[in-house]
Length: 256
Image 1 (tube, rainbow, N blue to C red):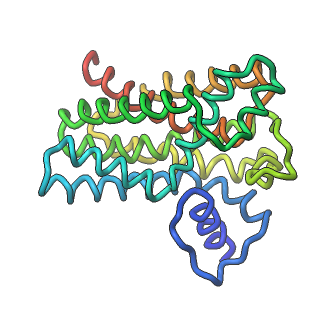
Image 2: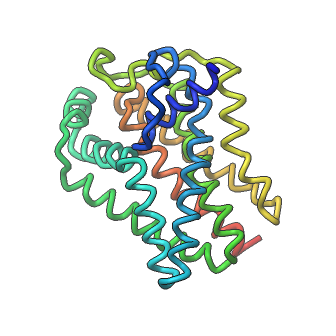
């Protein structure tokens, strides 16, 4: 029963999907639910695939891709996009760790954040359009992989970096207090990598190299600039690594 609680806690944290009232909220559940974050990504990817499939029966591929992207934004409440915007506003406008963290707490979106979100959505659209040229099956696998693997890579920052915002006012406080546990890492790793086994060409595992390298670079950058990570940094990592995953798939299929 506890695992069911953990799953619904992860679902509630990452999405707007209502959960049963009989699921209690406990900080320890949010701490231990991290292993299900990539699985939530699998579900989100599957839902976006469903929206794409239904939309494609009526509209063009381009419109269907846009609808699938909008479905993800709606279901998550633009949770990760908000983190991306705040991160770019903060790092773009702040020159000291203190200033960066102050800007990051501001709920208003600035120029850097606006440009980042627009470019992120544009890159996703054009990359997904290119991936679709490989066929429907590869497209669906890619969508699900992008959502699952990016969430796993973002979640690993909790283990690699210290949390640098005020824990008392942070929504991510329980997650930030989480210590590395093999029982959390292994299930998350399995869920994050699971979609890879469904691709027709197992060379697709090669995309792990640029994806992991990019996530590690972001971790290094965050540590150098502010000494660790924030919840917004995790959201930005998810968004940017998702884009890198799609770009890596395109390069793989074009040159290998």
